[in-house]
Length: 151
Image (cartoon, rainbow, N blue to C red; front, side, top):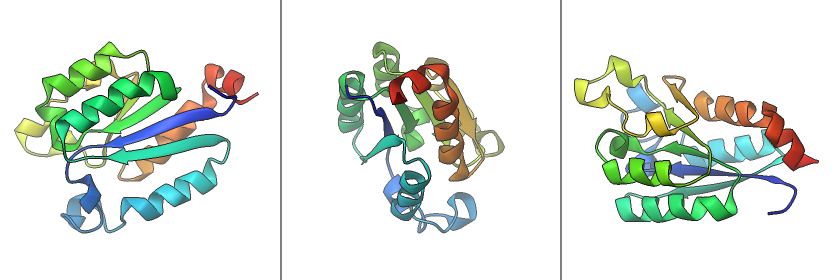
């Protein structure tokens, strides 16, 4: 790896519909525009993005993260509540993960209250909207090990 701190933002199913799908829950902003905002704000971090509606593709990307990224931010969407396989993949790699939920899953349907990935993530955020990604990147940027990468 080079001296730039490399971050993967990983999205699961239906998150490609941000800004269109249930705006009362997920807001009206699409993620592509927001991603550009993040990249402009966090210029010292190299941020890559991957979204898939397919469980196997998400697992492949998690497994690849170990060799390519210093940290990963994951919003597995509905798979957060159902995919033991994605949780196992996060547990199996050395990459530190931060879990994100745009909505507050604990104020929603009972089936969304369980996050199978949460115990394998170094930190978790729920209910901050898209601002949660900015908060996660700020957290990463402030970690002592990140300072060593960026020098």
